[in-house]
Length: 222
Image (tube, rainbow, N blue to C red; front, side):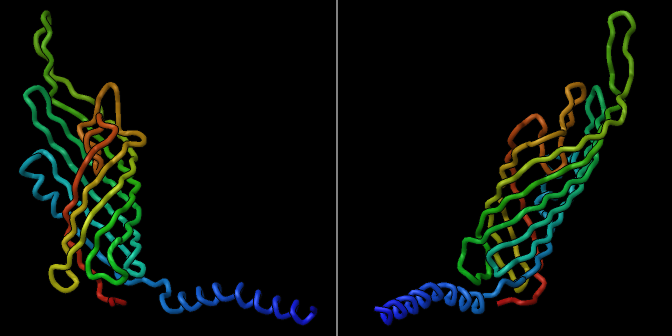
């Protein structure tokens, strides 16, 4: 009986250690490594000049791929607004950044990308209005302006998008965005026209889309 006890203990130790051994083999087979770095520019913002000529904005991105499955993403942008109306002129400028990650749902070592992502965004901007015309029944018309007001705002985003290789190491990417306002960027007395990177501050949720051209730095590519 003592012999059977030792045999049982030996087999149990082997069975217990086998999954750990298998995991070690799997880790050696597919180590965690950087498999690509992409730098990109949001070219969709140039087409917005037609729809919103009062707005000028630029945005770029950097994403670092791990095993072509997970991507750390950083975006940075600038926005400027000059809106001319009959009764006032409005000015705003500021910057924004986003940080988050993407998950690729395609096969293990794809050339392209189809996936979902998450972002946290932060904006800092200021705005003011001048040449504000006010008419009074007894005093006639009066021209005034507002002081410069500084704001900050934050939001979170959920994205779904694609990246397709046009030529070697050059990609076109498109993504749909759902943006949820978290804090800041609103004022009861003087509401901002736009929050850089987020959009209309009157909405708790904004929808959007990005169109990027990327260049992938060619190393560790499989």
